[in-house]
Image (cartoon, rainbow, N blue to C red):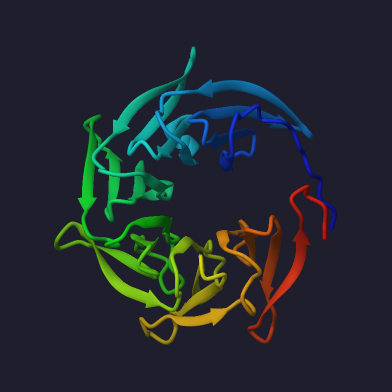
Length: 305
C-alpha cells in the first residue's frame, strides 16, 4: 500500500489546532491560535487557497464540516466562548449563526450524522455541552446540558446512527470526555426529549483529551476510543449480541511517551490513528486474537518512522 503526502504552508501566524477535509475530500479547513480559519481546495496533490475567515476573537480550536445535503456549511469553536456556523454563498463564506450561550472556551464540536438533521454538538470549559439545531421553521434552537463534566469538556463524538444490534431505529447517542478524567456516553430519551448519561467510563487518571466512536462496519460490536493526558489510549467495546450495556476496557499498549491528544478512526472503522505529543502518529488495528497492533508510524514530516 502506498500513500502520498501533501505538505504546504497554510500561512497561519500561530499554531494550527485542527485540519478537516469536507465530505468529498476536496476542501480543507484549518484553524489556529491566530484566531483565523483558512479554506483550501485540495486536488491531485495540489492545493489552492480559497479564503481566510476571521470573525473569532481568540484561538480557534476545532472546525467541522456539515454533510453536503445541508450545503457547504462549516462550524468553528473558539477560546472566545463562541461557536460560529458558516455557509458558503456566491461571495464566499459568511456567518449564518453565532452560538454564544457558553461562559468559557468552547473546546470541541461535532455534527451529527445527516440522518438526525443539522445538529451540532458542542463541549465547553464551563462544564456544559450544548446541541445547536436548525429547525424546519428556519430557526436555530439551542439545548444546554449543564454539569456534563464539572471541571470542563474537552471532546465530543457522535455514535453511529445505525447500531450493531439494530437496523431499524436510528441511534441517538454521543460520547464526551472531560477534565474529570471520565468518558460519558449519552442517549436520547423520547420521554424527556433530552440526552441523559447512560454510562460513565472511568479508567483514565488525567484529563481525557479526545473521544471517538468508530463507524459501524456491520460487526456486532460498538467501538469507542479515548485518549488522555495520562499518556494512555483505551478502546471501549460493547457487545450488542450479549444484550449487556457494559463496556469492556482495553489499553492499546503500555503508556505512550507523551500526552495523547487525538484519536481518529478510518472510514472503514477498523484502523485507529493516534496523535501523540512526541509529534508522531501511529496506526493501530485489531488482530484475530482481539489484540491491537501498531501497523504503521509516521513522524511530523509525514515520513514513516
